Every structure is written in structure tokens, then in C-alpha cells.
Amino acid sequence: MHPIVYALATLAGLLGLQALLSLRTQYAGPRAAARRRLDTLAARLAERDDPTGASLLRRGEAGDWLASLRRLVPWSRRLDTLLCRAGSPLSPRQFWLASAGLAGGGLCAGVALLHGPLGLAPALAGAIPLLVLQRLVRRRMAKLEAQLPEALDLIARALRAGHSLSFGLQMVADEMPDPVGTEFGQAARQIALGLEPRAAIAGIAERVPSTDIAFFVTAVLTQRETGGNLAEILESLGNVIRERFKIRGKVRALTAQTRMSANILMAMPFVMVGLLSLVNPHYAQPLFRTEIGHILLIAAAVMLAIGYWLCRRLGVVRI
Image: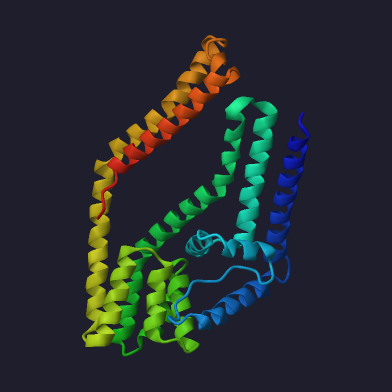
């Protein structure tokens, strides 16, 4: 085996071990709760440098060489946003280490077990953390949108009782679970620490990429500029969001066949290759043992991914 394989395997193992150790050090042990509170406080204090007052959480470690490298990558800002939206306990440093470890491990396994261009394919395992993170973001945002009508009703009742908007936000934080309680609670704490209410409310829209949240923020900011009955506006907005959820459920039921067709078409090539390998083991061997077969497999995987994406897009209806 080539010596570079051993070097890459060692590097991948060290990166994975470093990620596990840093995660355990930061979020395990008797001082974990205190560390999380200190990190949250440091993030809030860092927001003072933002002229808008609505910046996202800074998750980079001061003096870390990986943090310096991430500043050179334009996509690192979006990574911080995704980690914040997903509510992930991972820092960007841990995320990069995990991705690099999976990519290095997959590359070593591919070079050791496969030959030709197909040996580079397992290095795509480095994209697994990103895919998982995006799925966590979608799941958390969907949960927040489902909780939003109840949160708006709670704020509207607080306003009708004569309380302020910040008190209503704090009620949502106290009475409702994550994620809506966390996001609204952060805005309430920012207002309590002296941040301008407009900036704190706008910060919710920055952290949460939801149309419903954008409607809420727009309604609040417009009411603060022009006046009006904010409680009635929020109640009407909550009813509109509930109706949108009903329509969205009907649309998902009507497009379920398209999504199922995409899943079946995606799984069919793998099922067919598996059946052919059981019936005639030598029939599909050229695909895995020859260079031309490797190229055909890579081309098939790319076309399969494009076809699956197109089928899923056909079943998406924006409401």
C-alpha cells in the first residue's frame, strides 16, 4: 500500500479524535452549563460591534488558527448561520474537523479498497455533516413555523392585558419550548440588555429564514412606525398562518405521488444491481473492476442525483 494512504489515514484519525475531544471538553462535565452560559454572554457582548445590533451568534474561537482560516473562506459566514439556525451545539471548528475527518477517512478507504477514479468517490463522505446540518435546519424551522401561531396568540393576549411587546416575547420564551421560545427569548433578552427593540425584532428574521417570521417582523416594525392595534394584527396573522398550514397539508397530500416516484426511481438502480449480483455474480463485475466501469458508475450517480433533484422539485409548491 502506498505510504500516502497511511499518512491520510493518520491525519483523518487525528482530526476525528480532535473533534470528539473538543466536543466533550466543551459540552460535557460538571462545568458544561456554566460554559454554555458564558458562550452565550460572549456572543451577546460581541453583537455590540454590529451597527444594526442584530448580528448572529459568533461561534469562532479567539486565537484559533482554524478561525483565522475560516475568515478567508466566504462560505464560513453561512456556516455560522446554519449552525445557529439548526441549534447545533457544534462550533464551526468542530464542524470543519468532522468534515475533514470523514473526507480523509473516505479517501483512505477508497484508495485502499478500490482502484481508478472510483477510489476518490468515498471522499464525498466529508459532505455528510453539511447534509445533516441542512436537514436539522429544515426540521427546526418547520417546528418553529408550527409553533408560531400559538406564540402570536400569546403575545396578543399579553398586549391586550396592557403589557409591552418585550414582556410578550419573554412570555413566549417562558411558556413555549424550543425553537420558538429560544428565538423570541433571545430577542427579549437583547431588549432587556439595552438593544433597540427594532433591531432585536429584526434579528429574529435574520436568524430564522421563514416567510411567516418575516410577516411578523414586518407587522411589528410597521406598527411601531405608523401605530395601530398590534394585538389584532398578530391575531389575524396567526389565523392566516393556520390557514396556510391547512393548504400546505392538502398540497403535500396531492404531491405525495411525485415524491414517492422520485424515491422509487432513486432506489431502483441499486436494487437491480443487487439482484443481478445475486443471480449472476459475474455479470456486473466489469462495472467495479475496470476503469471504464468506474467512469460509467460515476456518470450514472451524477445523472441519478440530477434526476432525483428534478423529480423532487416538481413536487414542491410554494405557498
